[in-house]
Amino acid sequence: MPEIITEPVNPEKKKGGKHRYLIYLSLVIVVTGLSLFLALKDDFQNTTAALRNSDWRYLLLIIGLVIFSYLVDGLIIFFFSRLYTRRYRYHQGLATSMVGAFFNGVTPSASGGQIMQVYTMRKQGVEPSNGASIMVMSFILYQIVLIIFGTIAVSLKWQLLVQIGTFDINIGTFSIKSIPIILLTFIGFALNISVILLLFLMSYSHKFHNLIMHFGIGFLAKIKIIKNPDRLRESLRIQVENFKIELRRLQSNIPFTILIMLLFAISLISKYCIPWVAGIALDAFNGTATGNISIQSFWDAVFLSSYHQMITGLIPLPGSAGVSEYFFLVVFQGYYNDYANTVAAQIVWRTAIFHLVMLVSGLITAFYRSSPKEHIEKANRQTFIDLQMQTYEERKRSADTLYETARLSRKEVQRKLKNIGAVVNPLTIKSPLDEVENEAMLSDGKKDKSKKPKPKAVKKVKAAGKKPKAKKPIVDDAWDNIDIKG
Image (cartoon, rainbow, N blue to C red; front, side, top):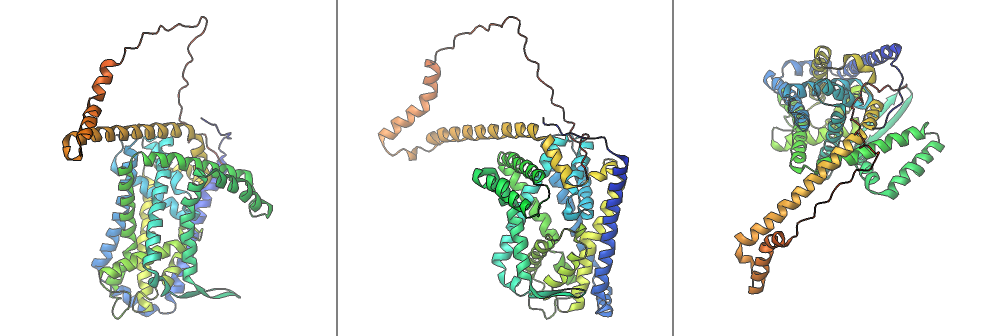
């Protein structure tokens, strides 16, 4: 197993890490409050009246949908973990899901959730190497589901996207007018595709791999966009190799892979449909062209939420604070019957999927005994990459073994089905010659066994003075040795 040169963890660094996430959390609160003020200042009375008159039963349904989505996320982690240990329980997967939700919400680009989930699973009895595999496989399947949703949203709901129109950016004296929302949507969609496509091409195309590693990164370093090209090359190499490993593992169990993708789709739909339920609660669909209480408006809300995710994914702010609220008003501007109901729906939606989630997940992270309270300074993307580097050899060995076992099993099943089909379905024999060949095929195994000579016993001669090599024990101490500079 490759080792990483590490240094003792500096107490000052630990303190700085905790302060950093307190700053992130404060930033989320301040920016969210500012965006709420800007949304309410134009029509405060009508918006608050819409919230007061909303149907509380549908508001409870919205909370239920959010809870259901995280129950599904916990089920995904539970299913993955049970591949490695039979002692893992569902409540542990649910707690791990909530820990990930909290750290994703307080770190830029949701970069801290994966490594904190690995640490939580380690304390729950899942080895760090297996936890890293779970997170990489989960990421691959989640991105594939996002791409499927984005493809359907862009291709089948093109008119819905065109109707959104444009928006303006005004920052002091700096102003950009009439920016088409369709442009940002396509950029976000291309980014979602490029993540998987880049890893796939670099994994299976040697020319493309060299092009990116040498010419692409080298060119960006020359024009001063990249400061440390060697570190980026190493990081990208590790991610590509881990993508290949975990993709082979997923290919070795196709039914399980399909099940996890289905669960991800259910989780996303339960979150994406919340703007539709909020519209029903606010009675905001009277006289609207796109929004109404129907199956079509349900899917319109799902696809509009997909557009929203593509856009906000471009902005690397903790929890997409401020950006998420603003672009909700832009994307859903024609979905409800007036601006006041649109702002009210945004408040209901954001409170349910973010603020309440952060409150509950923060409490779970603070009081759950397996949560990473003492290692929050390591909640970053680079720590997760280093963990993948340390556990690479062990995970590659297990993935290759699993893939070869599954491939041999499939061949054995196909051979048996072929032999059984020849006996059960005699109609497939079209001529006497075919019948003779079929009988010969069925009796082939018996003849080979009877005529096959027994292998002669071979005496093993031990070389004088040589002792058998002792196998090195596999030690999985990946987590404790990681310490990232900066």
